[in-house]
Image 1 (tube, rainbow, N blue to C red):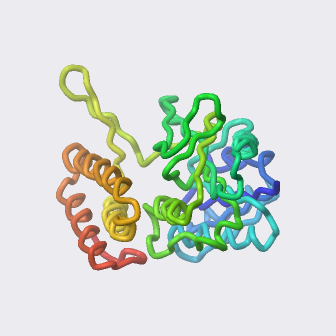
Image 2: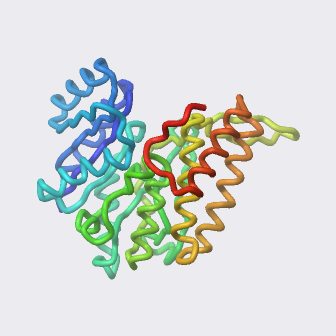
Length: 297
């Protein structure tokens, strides 16, 4: 089964070379879509693309992760691939990850219903492994479990699925792009699988550990003000769209959203600006205002 990797970059550092090197032998094709990085980043990416025989597309400005992914996905479709696996610039595959995911897919009894597969995720710094929320069969005897949604990085998607459900929603720009796509697939009776033995090295935000009383601690993501805006705005858009079809999903996601925002406002610096960005995001979400944010925080 032919597989193309699509990697979205934005002001990447030299670690991206190591990530592409680890991926090169696991896929048939690599497409890098750069979202408006500076000349020095483009020069570095050009050398990497030549070294690893990959295609690079330069967007003159940051079009958002959804638009960048769609550009790469459409090229993968044009080239006749069956699968696309999407990444951001900070993730790195482990040995045999893609093959492990496809092997898990081969054991699923209703392959025609599978939209995508994901790995499990390992924190690069701590070695902790986390997984997606299970929605269906999670028997220990199976190499997969059914999940309700997965993140963009490491998501292995059948290219034929885009003909049925459409591409990523470019109006969201960033944040909830993956969640909204997964919900669209699930509400059209597709399945999303997690391959239990596939591992992707990944980080969320810029996590910081905060020590509390009695030797306890919490971890905050330290997302930027702009990301706080997008998270708030796009969560409201997604909740409004899927409230009646997936009410339990909305309630669970809202619970975690409130928890994460509370930690950010309490424990992260510049609390007023974070709160203002979040409030404006909620406001624009209720107004159904999408696209690239033009507000200044």
